[in-house]
Amino acid sequence: MGETVSVLIPTYNSGRFLKAAINSVFVQTYPDWKIILINDASTDESLESVQDLIEDPRVHLIHNDSNIGQAKSLNVGLSNVDTRFVVQLDGDDLFHPNTLDVLMSAAVREASDIAVIYGNFKTVYEDINGNVVKMLTQRGPEFKDRYDFILKNRTLRPRFYRTSCLRRIGGWPIGGPFEDRYVEDRRILMRLLDNHRFYWKDELLYIYRKHKKNQTWDRKRCEFMKEWIVRDALNRWGNKFEPKFMTDANGWRRVVCLVPKIQLD
Image (cartoon, rainbow, N blue to C red; front, side, top):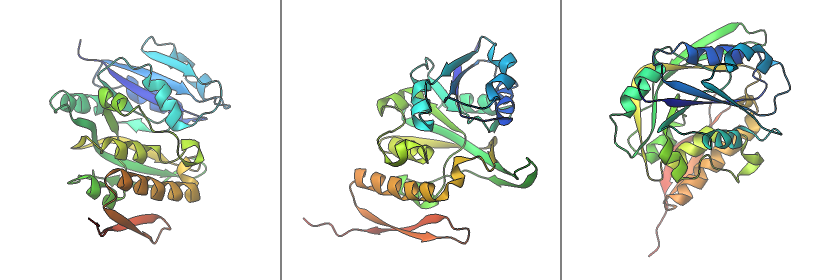
């Protein structure tokens, strides 16, 4: 037996996607895993569709009494983790069959200040009927420091965490706008960058399925949160830069530069 890794799967009305997500863990070439499935008060039939899978003893199902959002649900899951490493899989996404093998092999070799290991991912765009309309493979990105991470305007997938690093910062941050229901991925990454490093594995490891039910389609709130998270991080990092934003051709807000602030002695 190897070292067990925990897979956190937060789910809220994941519908037809949930079974495929869980199955992508069951078919991993790395056999030593456990799933912590956090049901955030779903009202659809997604859990019924995976009843055969959640009966497996490697799956621990947690029911939230009410809908509390992604960040708080992940903290509920984290409180049940008893392994050195934990990886997030959203209820509508997929792992590649060798994802855990690649990530665990890297994790046991890397220094203890490496908080996150990530790779390359494919975004699959689906229309309202579930038809694939476009696919895009994205590498990394690799970045030289925490400010470069901001300038890359990207999140990381998959997000494979060292459990001790998550617990050191108190888990997923809460106390922000919109009850912490948006862009929680970038917020925790920037919090971890306060004192930790990340490691990029140049392999395709994750499939991100983009569809009409994604929260990211609430563009106005997501874009507000992106700016808020950037400014919050820069303030923590010494308030040395002022971020400059622009709206790209697709209507998304991006950081284009960080302007040094005049430091008064």
